[in-house]
Length: 447
Image (tube, rainbow, N blue to C red; front, side):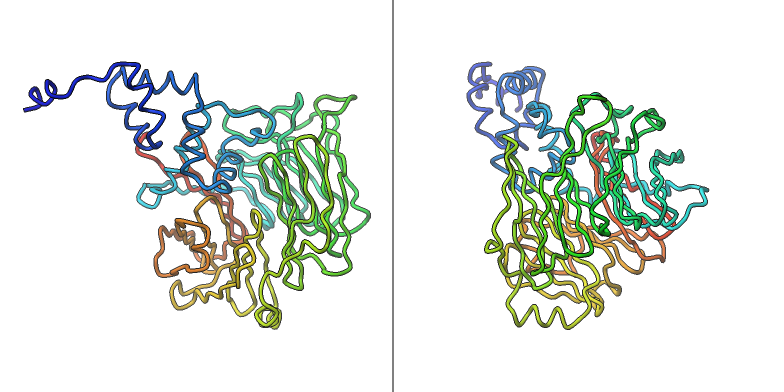
């Protein structure tokens, strides 16, 4: 029968396939690579000569999700334009997150037998985890190996990972960033190199004094970071090459936004060709406050650009409770956690939706992470709950009972979450007060 079919269907020649393949979606294109040697050769040739995988990403993946995946896979994308083979990795990554709920995973306590002070904050860079602690230390973890990369006088409040367009490079292809920026109760911001090789690199730490105000939040994006102080002022900083030392970046303050009203509670930094800093104020107003383009020119946006996070009545209801944490992503996605264990979500100024997780999950969230089309909740009971969103507006119609994936890490509250992409598969980093976990999903291609 197969022989008869082969005779009935004429073989496609090289030129015909080159015309057809650019018009199919990425999933079919990946399958075409597996048909035979000739088809694989055609797809690889198109990838080298055209932007076929970039086109698939642009057609099939929402722009904000695409930027987030690209920023995780290749944090230097804003410095060096990704090749089409790198766009293929972005597409594959997007597809993988739609299946991780069915994949086996390996959970490892990266701290091992290390006796460390309590963890306060955490980020992940490829296979590596960076953590801040109550003793002022910032530690860099690889399996059971650990090195202190920064020392503050007091409690580390927040940290972020960054890239730098200079000679300073990390010493592992599995680490995506060069630098860590961290802040403590000592009112100063430190910039230090990541990795074991640059532990004693001359010129570090680079210390920034933020007008003697207490910085409570740091947000990073490529070679730019944003600091939010306890008084509600926001400063935007950029790393530039130093003419004196090519290994150590020069930190330039682009602008400081100080507003007596409305008082800013949370910030985020986001963008593609245009980098934008957005803020959520205590009055419920959410707004872009700062924007810059490829040319390096930046502008401070007017106060009038603020838009209401919620209706005055709804915001009054939210403010009647103590807001424990505020999470802000992209261009207007907000999640608030209150002392009554309610979770409020809002997307682009829509009326916020209130969720009570107790009837469904028998616990309440301590921390929340939005990554691509994944919503991850770190619970007080020590369990992770993952939800898969078909569109970001699903945050407003979330069915808490339809959990995509869950995993228990014990009985202690999960205080921080982060996600990274590695050649070994997607990785989730989660931390409790005294333990840091690395959860590696194993895709079928590696089994």
